Amino acid sequence: MTVQELYNQKRMTPREIAAKIPSGSVISTDTALSMPYGIMEAVADRVRAGEVTGLTQHTILEVPGTPCYQQDVAGGLTGVSWFSSGDARMAVNGGWADVMPGFFRDFPGLFEQYIDVDYLCVTVSSMQEGGVFACGCSGAALEALKRKAKHIFLEVNANMPFSASATPFRLEEIDGLCENDRPLATLPASNLDDVSLAIGNYIAERIPDGATIQLGIGAIPDAVGLALREKKHLGLHTELFTDSMVELIQCGAVDNSMKPIHTGKTVSAFAYGSKRMYDYIDHNPDFEMLPVSYVNSPIVIAKHPNFVSINAALEVDFFGQVCAESVGTRHVSGTGGQVDYVRGAVMSEGGQSFIAFPSTAKGGQISRIKSTLTPGAIVTTSKNDVDCVVTEYGVAKLRGRTLRQRVQGLIAIAHPNFRDELTFEAKKRGLLL
Image (tube, rainbow, N blue to C red):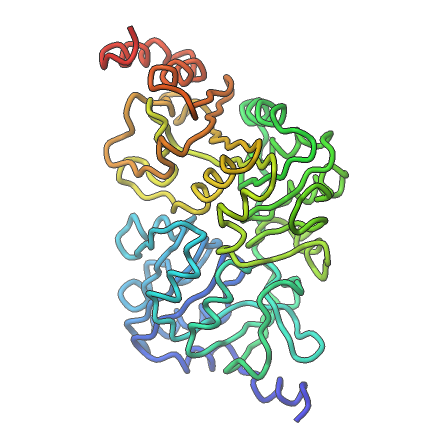
């Protein structure tokens, strides 16, 4: 049988694949763009029709419209979010979805050790020579999921980039496939306001030429990227590959030449951004999509001298405890890779870690720097791990500083409208004289 004959034999419709998933099954996808919309919408339709029930679907960083988090499938299809965004956040707070706590680097091991994955369903590129497919925008947990899953179904999408370094799927390994050339989800461009630009400049001026960097999603990481355009010989080793990184590569600031490992290569565990970025990844030998257990290992991160990590927070208290996951008890997101990169960066020779955020929330009504965290807030990064905190008013170095020094540094970068109140709280607690 030729490769094309085998392809034709395994080709189905999304509805036919969904019909093969019985009640009580556990389904999994990987990060963001790996989720096969056609298959999962067909599964959700069967749930709505009462044809199947008791399904569980595991997801990592959801894109808009993820079917398992819609309220009309609640009870028949339960989403379990391993990071949370958009619809998953709403579903978790609404009570019809669940969350899985964990460090991003541990996700592959958690799947292999604890989760019985009946069906792995994933969006992949068009078939390559020899009957090979790959999800060029996700490599985080696919190797582990591929080993653990009892059955594998692919949704072939010509818009998905191919990366030779990503987890391969071969025709003979899969149970079936369908075709769906739906445009890949994209992220809108960030609004770079004065606050984001100020924070970006504070961080960029502390990043030396030749450093290796990790950035996240949003206005502040994009502002950092903009401020780094004049740097030289930067490297990229990051869980998430974004458009700001493509800009840095194409302007010449990033060439990965100083990296002691993966020299000349950009390393990532997943990608989410614009079509321009997806086109950049496609068949690019200078880009490597690798498992997050490797990419986010603090030991691997620390092998890069002058490693710099930039991550976000919702609030920070006087001790330096960082909450990036909840507003009080209200769920916002998961731990992700923040702790992975905070620890890896400070282990790196000359490394630095920045937790960056605007000084206020709710239009200036609330200070994000607080005497104590909001009751019920989740501590993402501990006081013992945090290095530097940044707002539009400057940088507070916390690592190696006493509690009193931390309080002084944090109050100095809080919004001026809240400094007197914070000082009063610190004196009341005996933290300042």
